[in-house]
View 1 (cartoon, rainbow, N blue to C red):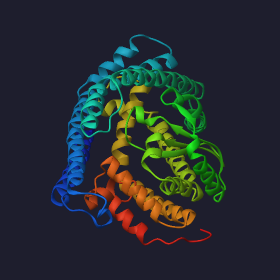
View 2 (spheres, helix red, strand yellow):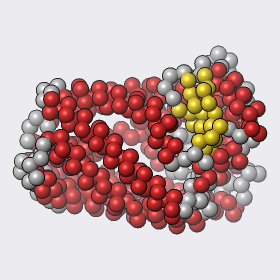
View 3 (cartoon, helix red, strand yellow):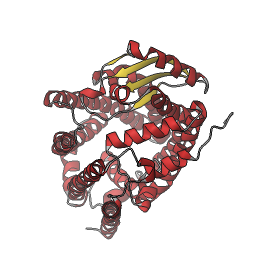
View 4 (spheres, rainbow, N blue to C red):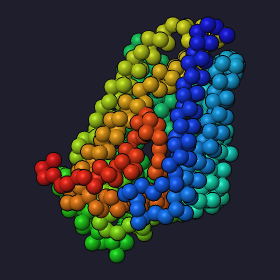
Length: 421
């Protein structure tokens, strides 16, 4: 190994060790406090359910350790053990065109990664989720979903890879800006067509049942307050795969489609559903989605510009001791280095995400006139999803995109409706 290679490996091991230490802290904190019923949950949860919640968190975390160790070992062997160098030479030996070589290079990697993940997904779905009463999917549905996902990802890879590699070949000096623009337009395109083309391949979307027509009108009225026109309100047959519940809206601009899980309709009353949707409307009103897109695109532009300059030299091939490293091999290595470099920024991203969630909560209170609906819905969601009620404070600040549920409920209890915000 080269000196740079050893240094990168050491840094990566330190990052992974830090992640495992954080998970250990989180589980130990749960072990110490997991028997206590938090004040916002008094009267809503008993000791048996609290124990089930802790057991679910512990089992998922321990299984996550195993999966993570497996993934990291495979990654280290591939990048630092010579497999990437062999793969690079093997693909090059076919002497195919630049575009075809790139598609095959990443298609095979994607397929291998997907297949390696299968045992873990099966165990998580049919063992852990089944044990705690969440799983409702069948082997037939799982297999069908697997091959549908594989087909869709393959088609998208052909489209994105084909156009992306063509742009790189067609404009050697300025491909970075063309590629960034293409990915930006393509991501917006996928956001627009996914609800109409991709999502219906997995779930059935039907107009909201007649018994909920009154709810539908209240949803439309509430969304009009923030300048959103609701085109349709659908219910989705999420219950055929899982008992977890959710709601969201899709669409670009001021016209949205509202999607309600059938599990959500079954478990929550009208005011709670309106509160959940009001929170999502709050994100739109506060332009959180737009801000995230702008930030991610600016970071992406900087990243692709730096990548362009790094890939002009043979530095990456030299660092990883790969003779004649192909363009595609350099992309893999850059992706790895990028994941290590971006890791320290995780708590910054988490902080702003939690800040946005608190603002969306306040908007939900403003729109519904009271925090009670959102408080009640969050308590139900936490109970039904067996959410960890006791994350370690440091772990939560580093990783959590939402405020810890107990902290969030206490904050909501202090909120009052604010007009005109």
